[in-house]
Image (tube, rainbow, N blue to C red):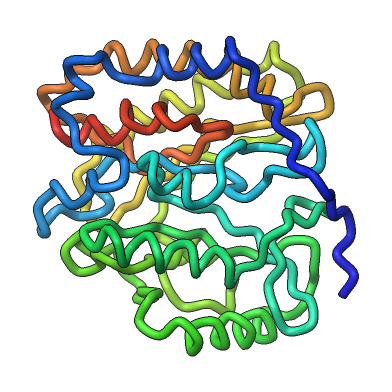
Length: 299
């Protein structure tokens, strides 16, 4: 099995200052945090009738991208640690090889397979049955047909029966507790179509330099947050990526530059109105940062 770009050790670039900055900027105050459910169980505190499209859901972009160096790395937390922190959207980039999905970021194998991720999700949901996980699945660094990609995906569904919810509509939370909701970024897969009419997507990720964050990336993201707040359709899933990189910009630099904008936006919200920002995939989440986002669901 040739897994190009495999790296033997984890590259952790999380500096102490950045970790503190993100936690302080995107976290919640001590008193408010004490009133919130813990990251592992926050969905369990919401009513069954809550539509997934009308929640604020923290997520991760390139969820498993821990390897490959600063131009590739997007996260520092493992999947179990992300889920325990409150992340409920996972971004799976699957290379087809020898009949399985190897998780990649471009040419770099991330030392994990799709089955490992499903095991992590299944174990977490067994312990926290009130939760659900939204999962984007797309092909990366391979070029098999949609039909061949779907055949491999079907084999995973048969080996993890009942775990993946793959209907073509946005469910209410009570319908999918304990399950993974499929967001299909491949024409052969069932589920909620990534580029279909039920998904309203903002993902302008090819940002050249850090100087383009304030003038381009942030205005696009904030406008999409505004649109999510104004919407009311339970079958329209807003997804706003805060991540980016480019010819002169690494993911870490982009996350640093976005952090004060995101913090300022959150600080300006009327939390008592329970504003809905939709699903928010981010780079370099910390154990404390998702609380500011899922906390919006509780006023």
